[in-house]
Every structure is written in structure tokens, then in C-alpha cells.
Length: 113
Length: 112
Image 1: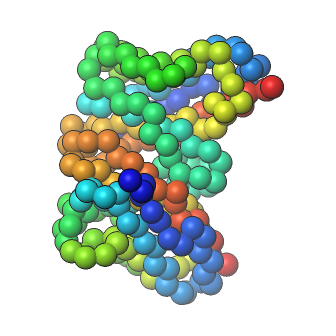
Image 2: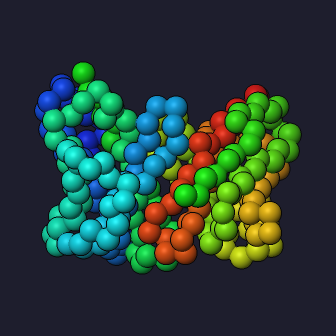
């Protein structure tokens, strides 16, 4: 059973460009969570999605950030007009149900030049 | 909002030694998770504790939850270089398990 997959593993963008981060949950998992790990800071919750629905986006910045988890395909975290402060490691986690353990992917390391 | 404080911030031990690290919550714990992260990699799930007094072990790692103190400890027996990494505790502060709050992590180094 493959684990949570994220791609790309590393992403370099110039200021003002768009970044698209993809997350494929573990087989049988329909709950996806996105977290961000900034340098020298802990892991911070961003958004929780279930197939086609955003359940909790209380950790998402108000502007430029959006997330989706379509019926088919991976979950996407989209950052528009990236700024240097967006440079971080973005982790995706998945679980089979809301009450069960979240399993994390390897992360996408975003560097904004 | 819930905050998790982990101590010590970092730890260097000689191979073969035992060690204990802690995670203290500012609020009631509904679930406490321990993960391990290698530098530059993802988080590996270690254990989850839900009930006060609960204790779980996996190989040489034992985790305990003290509900009254809102604290969890992770004990490693006879440490090995493979135990090196960053240990993160995460907590479900709402009971809904929709978002976990994490501590800043404890960096463990094991000297051969």
C-alpha cells in the first residue's frame, strides 16, 4: 500500500508566479490535510478537505492560497503570486476517517526567488 | 488556541543510553500523536495516545499520556543512531481530529 504521495518534491518559483502542489492520499483515504512548516517554526495546519468539500480552512491565509480535492485526482494546494515569505515545506496528510491517524507525505519544498 | 511545548529543545546522547522527551499542552488533550521527522523528509507516525494513563510501546520506544498534567512523555531505551531525528508531538485540541497542533520538535542526535 503506497503511502501519501506529493509532487513535486522541490519547486522553485520566482516572485509573482503560481505554485501548484499535488497530494495523492493513501488508498482508501478520503480525508486530506495540508500543513506548512516555515523555517524555525513548527508545523501549522492550513486546510482540511474531504472529497469535493473544504471542511476547515481556518489556517489558510486569506489571499492567494486555495485548495481543492476533486472527485477524481489528487488534492491541489495552489498559491498565486508567490512571495518570498511563502518559501516553506508544505506537507499533506491523509486519513481514512476523521477520527483516525493522519499519515504524512514527504512534503514539497517551495523556494521563492 | 492550544499550544504544545516540547522539552528539551535538543538532545545529544551516547549510543546505548536511555532518554526521555516531553510534550506539554496548554489545554485539554483529546488525542496526542508522536511523529518522527528526518531532516528534509516527511513525518513518520510513531504512536497515538488517547486516554489518560495510556502507555504504548513499539520496539524500544514507549509513550505515556498523563491527562491530568496535560503531558506526554516519550522514552527511548538503549538508543541507536537510527533513533536520531526530530520528534514532533501533535495534539487534537478539539476532539474533532480535523486539525492537529504541533510542538516545535525535539532534535535528537545519537553519538556512535
